[in-house]
Length: 193
Image (cartoon, rainbow, N blue to C red; front, side):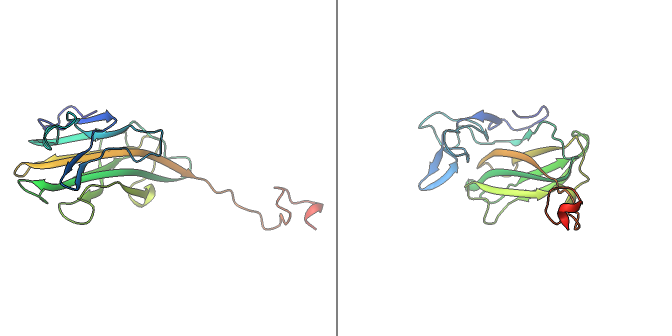
């Protein structure tokens, strides 16, 4: 759920099965999570009523933050991945707000920018976007990694919706291969002659 200190008056982060919203043919909020069936739940900004107005539960009047639990990235080459949805192209000030993603290696004491989506571009029109980052390329990996997603409506009121699904920390470990182990049994012995 959203974080203490958030200033948004509506559209705070929640987890569940989102009720999609359309403006004509443009999806403002997703109808489904990104996971294949039977998955239906994701984190998203506000749940409006079925058939409600477009702006019934979008982000309004400030920012809302979703923060992950602590993740361990210390046991190998770590990759952070997630799927995100962001829509800021509808309402009073289209293309004026951003969706920020930040990463921490000290359990949230300090944060480093990972990506900023918007205020314009190809990824601000809704739709699920898959992202993956090699952690060491951004920040020193530790056992206390966290990621946070900050969505805002700070300009003139717009329809701002965001969603996040399938946040993962993947560790790649490679065991060095001994070139003398010709048969690949993990031993250098008579079987390699």
